[in-house]
Image 1 (cartoon, one colour):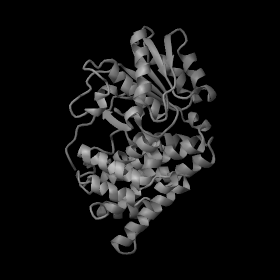
Image 2 (cartoon, rainbow, N blue to C red):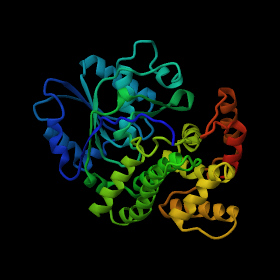
Image 3 (cartoon, rainbow, N blue to C red):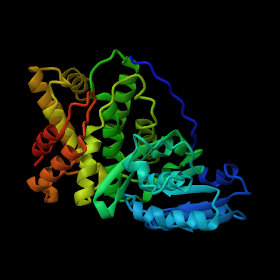
Image 4 (cartoon, helix red, strand yellow):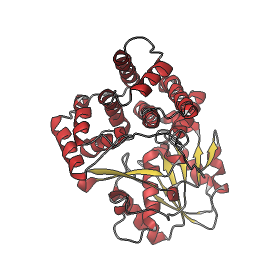
Length: 386
């Protein structure tokens, strides 16, 4: 196991009716900006609960954060932050709203020019200050409610980039599983797949003798496999909703990734599919992960075999046969959740693969747990999924 330092300061308020405790977490002296997406919070009653909890507070609102939050929209929100002298940001929505709010929080105190540099020059620009923020989660998926990561798209350049900083970790996050009840099938499926692949990025690498992290990761995977179909079938199964929601949070709050190598190639490649074609983030992951497993099977052999045995009960056959079966079972699970796993389903052709290959070559992009996935390997991974 590798050395590590771990600190997670996010306070979690989990369960039914927890939104009513919102006023206990925010100072009445602060000017608050509520940030949300397309308006689903008005239909599912979350907006009404938030407003009731904040009666008497100084509240301004900004809506319209997209499913893949854009730099352009976030900058409009930033104008509101500055005009209204906002003290605290409250993200009410799914991971996209939370990610957008993190970027706005960081941009609000950025003093070195265009805030896009927070993303485009992440190696040089370190975010050390941000407006404080809290979250009311309505869509389990990204784990953004308990980490300091965010992904933002820029429409004008067809880019999708990420940044991370402890400064944008929420002060608190409210997780009420009943918010899952009104979600459409596609969002539930996306949430399950997103959380599943988050675990795989931290688990499916190479052994470093970290059995506890492995078992925790496997526990989350097994829970998602068990609970995902349940909540997809019956949205008002509270226990399934609760287990799904907490699994998504645990998948990316940093805990299972401590002391172990991490990959994130599936995400890095998937972001390009969203940037060029607008494909849902989770669906890009469902496309790319099987390709990564197949093309990188020798590097990842020990962990894929472990994954196949412990998650799918695959114990017989040659190593290659067992790996083939593990990939097939993974694809089957994604597709059972209603998530297509082939580029052809989305009309993506070799021309897009060439665009991504060329972009990675120009950036000298290296991905994977050993930084061995260059533009050529990226082409092979995507070609595997046509």
